[in-house]
Image (cartoon, rainbow, N blue to C red):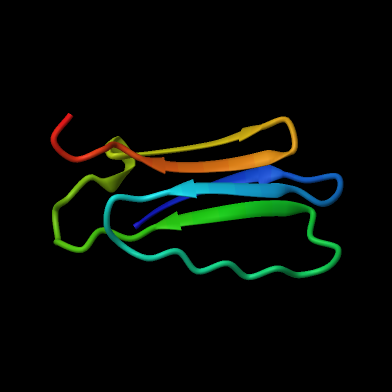
Length: 69
């Protein structure tokens, strides 16, 4: 499992694009950080190399590489 965290100073937007898998969003008032947990389907897989996670301005981006290029 890989976890990325970002400091927050207010509400944010979420942009998620995955070829496969699932996204679970938990929204809670008053958080001071956003966290993204990447959990691989197969042991030994380095999911951090396959998914870009970044906070750009007020938008949290979670984008998986497209399969097949």
